Image (tube, rainbow, N blue to C red; front, side, top):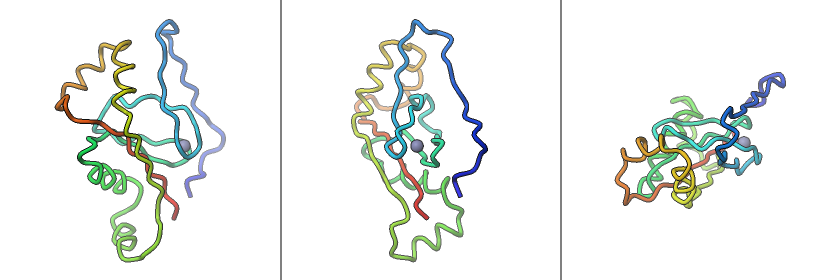
Length: 131
Ligand SMILES: [Zn+2]
C-alpha cells in the first residue's frame, strides 16, 4: 500500500553547488535523502520508511512518534494486541557525527541544534512498516 505514485520522482538539485551536500542513506532502499533540519518533524522516504531525529536517551518516544505517523489509532490498537513483527526499526547512533560535519558547512543549522541540550546524544530512528 506504500507503492503508490506513478513514477513522479522529485529531483532536488542544490543551487549552491559549491557547498558540499551531505545526505543520509535510507537503510531499507538505499535512497539518498537530505539530513533532517527540523528535529520535531517526521520525514518520509519514497519507499515508505519514516525517520526522525531524537535524543538517544528517548529513542522509545521517537519510535512511538513515528508509529503514530505510519499507522492509524485503530491499527496501532490492533498491532499492540498481536504478537507479530509489524515493522523494521533501524537506529543510527552516529547522527551526532553527521551533524558536526553538516554544521561546519551550514551555520543555519546551529539555531536548530541549540534547542537541545548539547550533551544529549542524538540518534536517527528509521521505521519501515511491514504490515
Ligand atoms: Zn527508503
